[in-house]
Length: 263
Image (cartoon, rainbow, N blue to C red; front, side, top):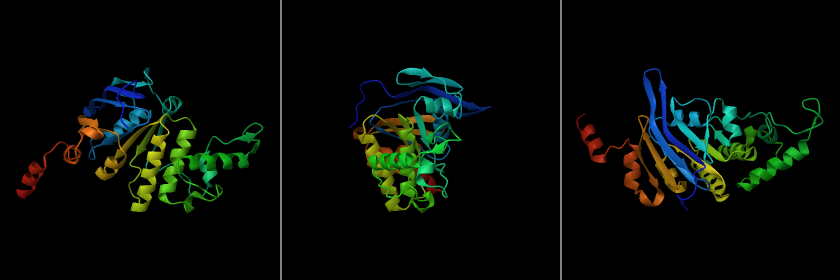
């Protein structure tokens, strides 16, 4: 259910990002609400990657303002963004396939009995937490000690998402989470996204090229083209033709057909 009332969890106001003379983002504004999936769509070069790297603290905007829970923030590093509750799950997932599910879940944040790193790792406790956190969003890993390389692509995505949520993500940025997956694994990921949304407290930014996937799970849409917002809206206000046209950079299908006919 889409609700535009209340304070957005994240508000972007007139974000501009320049790399020398090149303008990657030109006045992008967007509101992201808790308990919603906000699809960020656009072709290659539209500015999606630049925008999420600004939200993740990798880049700093040239101008504009980010607000989190109504407060202005200035992320200088990814650690700043993480502290503010912004969790990013990139396509490469940052998982070690040879290590166990639990070790990947807690990578760099292990629980020790005694001072780290000379204390003894509390593997039983970490296994229990890993199992419980993953089952909350729909994946039952019977053996948290199994190597991540034995998991399906959809299960690995769920592991990365559960890890981000457990360690404090209020805003979850998912960078093309269904790309390079088979159809069954894509559905695993989409189900995970819907379960996270059902928690009601987390805002999800879903970056995708897939029109069908965005229509299946998104509540709100923002379309980028050449660094600018060319359209936005809620699910109820966007027909399928609107989504297809905006994903094509705002071009009408008739214009595209005419361009192809000249070849």
